[in-house]
Image 1 (cartoon, one colour):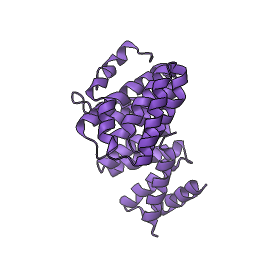
Image 2 (cartoon, rainbow, N blue to C red):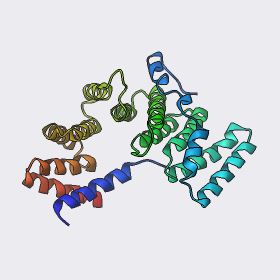
Image 3 (cartoon, rainbow, N blue to C red):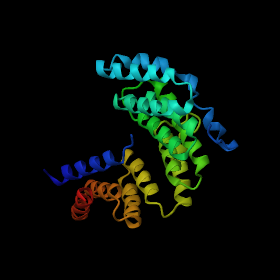
Image 4 (spheres, one colour):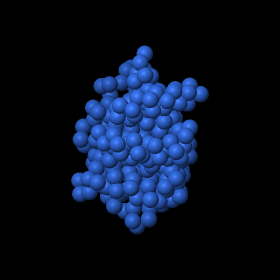
Amino acid sequence: MGRTQWIAVAVVSVLLLLTYWGCPVRPPEMEEGFQRGPLEATGLESLIRAARANLNPAEIATLSDLESRLKKEESPIDQLPILKQMAGEWYKAGQPAISGIYARRIAEEENTEDAWSITATTFSICLKQEDIDDKTRQFCAGQAEQAYQAAMSLDPDDPDNQINLAVTYTDYPPKDNPMKGILLLRELERKYPDNARVYTTLAQLAIRTNQWEKAEERLEKAVELAPDNPDAVCNLARVYETLNKMDRSAAMAERCTALVES
């Protein structure tokens, strides 16, 4: 296996490790997000009808049983364990939009930063699916935005939700402000100049548009701030190789492999 392949394997491994699954306070400035992509844009029943054809008999039986148990529980507290099971089962079935709806019900009951962040992450994963229709994509974008904003309102000092919200805007740019995600990330760069993840995120966006020199600059900054961050190190190895800086690429690839293996 060549160096490029090793780097690709390492990057994929890191991304897999970082991928998730397992009444919100709403400041006035966040109202805009709650008006974008309303819940009525699509519904749970219509999503389930569309997804049912892709379920196997075991999945249908499990989900039907959980739905029956959920209807029998009148107390929201007693419903929570079942809702968590349903969110997990729908996620495993490859339906993050439906999983996110149940995750949101959990978040509305628990109203914690973690619960809202989980909801937002689930809807963000929906946005990255290639085979969803525009209506579902719009729905997931709006729901992710709302959930990230709810999480931010509960923990304003955590930059991760702010970064994730910016990524959501880049995955599904608002029609009236297509640069919103980029502008938010640049604002976060000024606000959190020592946060390596801001730079790795900006670098990923630069890679998307083949701006390899910008990606190099941002990843070098990320590695400087977090030398043991595999996301920064492995992607910098890739960028160096693309820019034909083979000695640097080889050295960074070795670091990447060591970090992933450890």
